[in-house]
Image 1: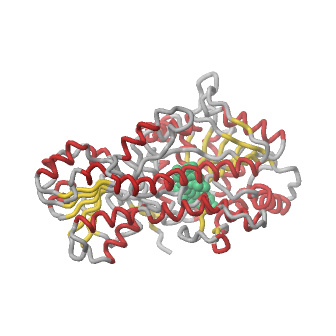
Image 2: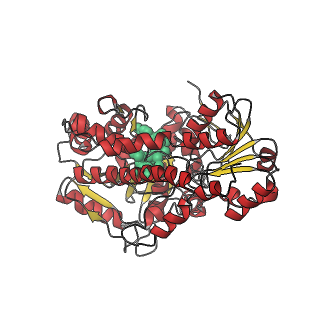
Image 3: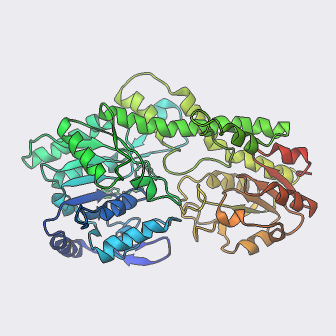
Length: 504
Ligand SMILES: NC(=O)c1ccc[n+]([C@@H]2O[C@H](COP(=O)([O-])OP(=O)(O)OC[C@H]3O[C@@H](n4cnc5c(N)ncnc54)[C@H](O)[C@@H]3O)[C@@H](O)[C@H]2O)c1
């Protein structure tokens, strides 16, 4: 195993051995100095932001409310996150400057935010927040009996907590879990580890799923958002409510659901709802394009119906990210394996299939503009991450698009203003300079509405290109000007461009 952990910016960190980790932990224990301690397990997209917000919470006298310890694993893929936090840097590239500011403040100024790989940290905790991942094995599998969960690392993480935690600590699970997981997976794992240490007090456990949104309002999405939560008994519920209230702004009072299965289901339902909404709009996208209609303007006109229709999704390139591509599968898995019933979430699973294949529509458009074949076409894809101005490439729809384009013989280059590398597709050519990329390709797909792309003007595009705007990046006036300069254009949901003959 390599002993180097490389951060996305290329910085290499030596992964320390057990003795060094133990020395550092002794220092952390001294620093904690008997203060109330929160340990956040998992310093990924969710845990690192949650840890930063908790470290920023203040008591009435203005001193930090909690001493916060972030725990992650001493592995090549994760040690750098620990190193970043201890250097005062957020381990997630974010357009929200507040995220970096809070990590810097907690780690270097108030010194109540530290990170470690030491499992001993759980023994210091009053509250342990679980923010580790729980994945499906293959997100493309949507037939109920074939959906598989990778529970091993999640269970191992919970067992580690059980092996070290104090008997009276509250465990607050934020990880998105299958319906029934608290009762059937988490409590048994904690109880058996605690029993092995002679602890037979009841476990104190709550489930409070995260609604964090990586993006320009990353930190606000943790601190200024209502949470739904649930707990296994009254004591746990009281403690969970008090804990959440210690770092979430008071006007966003947490909302308690009847039991842990309800809040587990709530998270899966809310993400499945959003995924289904996107899939639903996709079939109207295809209709609008064929009918010469600007669906973007139509959706805007419908969204004025506040309260019933203001959440209708827009057309787009595809769906990516960690949650919308898997949470419906967790729900179906729960039905089949934990509830052991024959219910099939047919609409939900169909939506997932539609969303998965959505980028192939943009592929069809660019192939059409390129004259019916992508063979030897120099094709630039603008946007790798799945969300505008966010450096998250997980399950990006650009993956399927690029794989298919390459298999059709296109010479693909990708660009993304937020990324210098594409970990999931290291062999694909990535160009760091947008102007060079635009000049040196014949066909261009604007996949993600990054700010840098929305600022492009007609003079940035050489004449005579094939251009697909998959995410409402170009204004109509820009499209008209580009078409006037000899480019052919199509847009996802932009039937009006087709009506104007921009594709010709
Ligand atoms: N990404 C989002 O926007 C988002 C939003 C809401 C909810 N969620 C949910 O939150 C959970 C976490 O998501 P994420 O995006 O932060 O995942 P992530 O993969 O970015 O982070 C998980 C982290 O946990 C660490 N980890 C794994 N096992 C561990 C262990 N035994 N001890 C310590 N650390 C361990 C991993 O190394 C990793 O750094 C998931 O269930 C996800 O569905 C995610």
